[in-house]
Length: 304
Image (cartoon, rainbow, N blue to C red):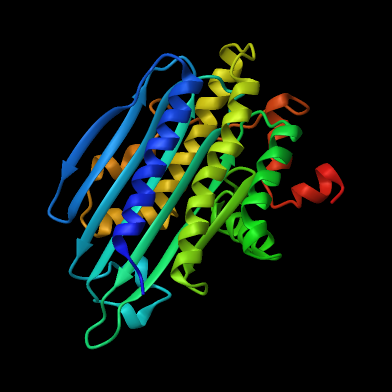
């Protein structure tokens, strides 16, 4: 049996914890809360702007209900097409000022579908992923070691399965490259009992803080100039492309009639596009290309 109140309590607590950790790392700007209500439900978008470390960071909580599951949510669940649904989650995207600090995304969510004359169907989803522009191997190793540690108590194969799922999901097919260096991604999680699934969601939320904040602290004071900033803005364009073309969460929100400002909170505040851009061979910018493919980071970087 699922308990929506327990999920809501976990999600709101995670929103508070993540915002507090990011505010402490920024040291200047604070999140501004925007509570909203729409025809589908309620939520609270928290946005930090023009910080010392973060150009923009958004941490959004939402709890919505609808009369029919949108197409993006039932493509691989045709038996739930047209069923009423309930969805709740916390989603965040962080766009730092310094190009040496990676962009990052995380979310945890809970869905319930109510097919007619059948028992409700529930599942969890979520994960976190890292998008560096100037990658450092020690950061990537820390990121994946933390992800592995999150998964270890829940099964020996959980990390490898969800790491592979992340590599496959955050892939820009039209560019033939991954969005970054991966992390964890999972959906349709209901194979464990409800309490175990909820514990995993909590672990993923805390794991994101443990994985990301040390990287920010390590890189936020790295000197940079116009060249690095221009490359950061160009690579942010890939983030826009993925979110608007491939991301199921964005499509679900828009197709279900969700609150547009909150759904598009993930967009970077500044971005640029350049026709047929190619980094100079042998440059630090060209080095990124070798990181935009699925790799066994733990084996390569630590000898596991």
